[in-house]
Length: 322
Image 1 (cartoon, rainbow, N blue to C red):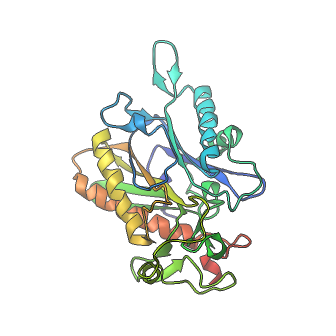
Image 2: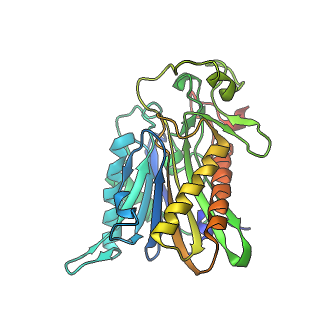
């Protein structure tokens, strides 16, 4: 069966780990030999790690580990576990004194779902690395998708369960572009092919009908039901094409179009939407605009799969319940 996920890109492994309560977790992406990377942050409330290193004007070319985690800022400690694993496996930026693993990542706010006061941490990050494989990526409520919800324009009480999705697009000349996205959006999730709402803010706390978020925005002077930012969509795209950091920054930018096609509203002040891009292959001479377009398409498909593969978690129904 065809692998339709991020690990269809040769040289990438993905691993998940989830807290014992099943309400938060982390996901790691491990390039076998490191990967040149770029990043684009568009949300107004980002939680990121190591993104400055990916600026094209800075020294380091490759990342050796990428992570996505729940737990808000607490989840950034997952990076330490990823680094521990990479040190053990002698992966890193070679200096005269030691190999220094370059780790980057981003977190989602899932504290309303996970109120246990235990968050993804160093140990969980290490566990995710141990589980990493090139098998098709487990989707839905796996890893960082464990605590993901969507449809919060009127607060968490009317939200729905979402999760993690991944998709791969095949292009000309053997090109592959894939995406992995953790969908924890403020807005509703829409199928771009039909315009139908798949998951989002419900009409009432007990209801199963999804509000038209676009129509609501036309009449709301301000959002209600928030005590803090409680959203964010994070993820990455990868291609089996040789690209520079500058080129990958553009691919990461264009991948955000996939979020805009499927999430309404996207890139809000309450989301920390962040997309990374990885170069994982030898192909050359592929038009950058084509790669960016494929990245956006793969991202949109991954978002849709994230909600369709999710399962309900009390009190959050999932798309499969509607």
